[in-house]
Length: 231
Image (cartoon, rainbow, N blue to C red):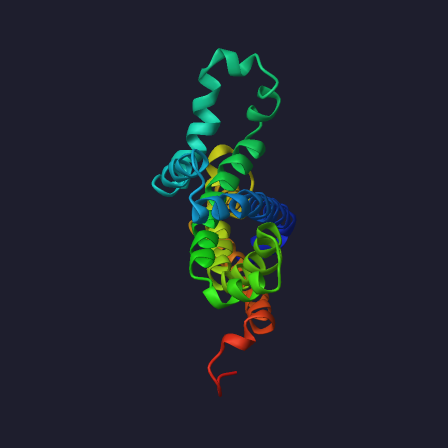
C-alpha cells in the first residue's frame, strides 16, 4: 500500500474534489430550478405543458446518465449546424457537457420528487388557505410549495447523494474529478488500487457530510411530522 504517493499528490485529489463539488452542486441547483415549475405543472396536469414534461422525465429517468453524457458530448458534435452555432462555444467543452447532462438528469428526478410531494399534500392545508381568502397563486407559493418542499427533503437528500455518485461519469469525458484523479495516480505510478481507494474514501467523506446536512434540515423543518417520543 503506497499511501505516501496519495499524500504526495494531494493537490491532484484536491482539484478532483473541487471539480466533483462544482458539478454536483451546480447540477442540483439547476435541476431544482427545472423541477420546481415542472413538478407543479405535472401535479396540476397543465394542458400541452404536462405531456411535454412527462416525455422529458421519462427520457432522462429511463436512460443511464452515462448514455446521456455521451450523447451530449459525442453525439451533438456530429451535427455541423451545431458546430457552426453559438452553442458550440459551450458544447465543445466537456465541463459544460457534463453540467448539462447532470442538470437535466437531476431535474427529471427532482420533478418526480416535487410532483409526489405536491399531490400528497393534505387537503386541510389548502382548504385553510382558501378560507383565508388567498388567491390560487398565493396558495401555491405561500402554502403548497413550502409544505411540499419540506416533506421532499428526505428524497432530495437521496437525490443529492445519487448525483454525487453519478458524477463519476465526468471522468470518462476527460474531466479530472475525484475518480479521474485516482485513475491518474494509478497510471502515473503503475499502481493497482491506491488511487481508487483514495477516491472511495473521499466520496464516502463527502457523502457523510451531505447526509449530515440533510439530516440537520430534516430535524429543523420536519420535526412536527415525527411520532411522539422519536428524536
